[in-house]
Length: 203
Image (cartoon, rainbow, N blue to C red; front, side):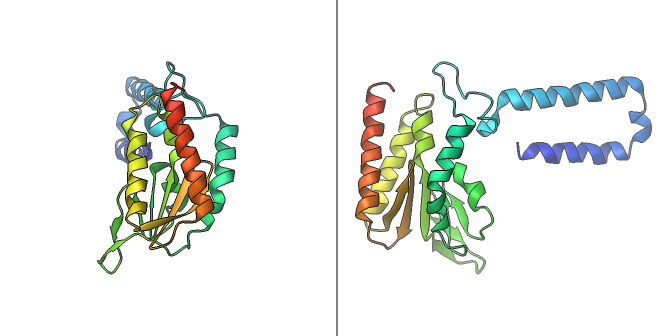
């Protein structure tokens, strides 16, 4: 989807230098047909789950997150995002990157290092991951995807590189060189246990 606007803008520029060609009825009909088909295919293709609120990711098994469910989810974990300072470096899962994209230092999980403006390689200060979404989609995708997140979080917390400082609605927040918050850790472990049990029951 991020590529589509650029393609259409490029087409506008291309046609602006070929106005005489565009005046031909056959060419105009052909071009309009291409535009309509591209819009239909963009929606049906649902790349990166852009239209998750309209189109299920899979029909069998049914994987669909309604708008009210998604809004409720966002409302519950928004306080975690607010805990991250505006100038802090952060590693985030794909779904959360748009909410943090105005920052200078951000990288996609599971990368933990970034080159800052001073051309120095640094380790991010915060990690935030939406495990809830992975849990929702695990029935339609490979189970190792969710297990990889569990292993990753175990690794960075067990070696005390990061500590869990917040957990809400399946979203976990970790901070570098920090002791884990007992309540947040307990909430995370309970969510993880339910997730593993649910998967075992085929839910």
